[in-house]
Length: 263
Image (tube, rainbow, N blue to C red):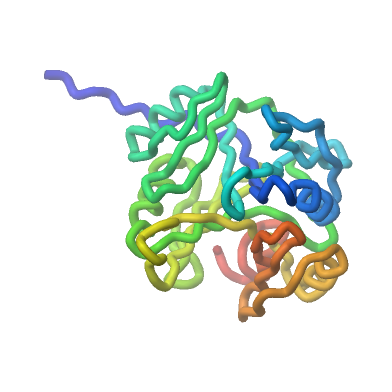
């Protein structure tokens, strides 16, 4: 009996970070995140006009989008742009993902830990947006209950074999770093404890790399309507005007890495 040939998923050619916020706060989220990233808005898309792309002003390719969600408080998710969406979705399924919704040309998938992400067609995006006001939105952090952390690390490492998968600077972190040229990387964070009732074992938030200018970026974001939630030694937690949490980190906005470290 011959052994089935297992083919790797098509390479991810571009990455998008999605800002997911309640639909009734969609305009507020768009106003804040366009100001933060120095972008303009594309036309609205979706049956309810719930999707919009943040378009860089310098001719670079977009890598951030906003979605108005009808239920829940929102959060963040990844869009992975590939040349062959069905093949990528099939490989994700083989590795333990589920299909939440299949649309014409793109798919909403769910990781083994329950985190939604999308496989979308690559549209020849290639030019990464620049650093803006000492910061760059460059990371989606997956917040994972201890019971799903190892499974999620294994899943993302296998799904993205040409990315650099390695332990982070702290024991609760694992980095899945994108190849050079892609705009968004992944950080997996193991939470301290399980969430009540086992619900919401996986969620996500956005991280901005600010280097040594975290305080200056924080002050700018506060002027734009964000609120300070907490200061930690290596990151600052903020709440945007649409209620979503995100973090300002001391990572280098050019490289994504911590100062004088590899992660």
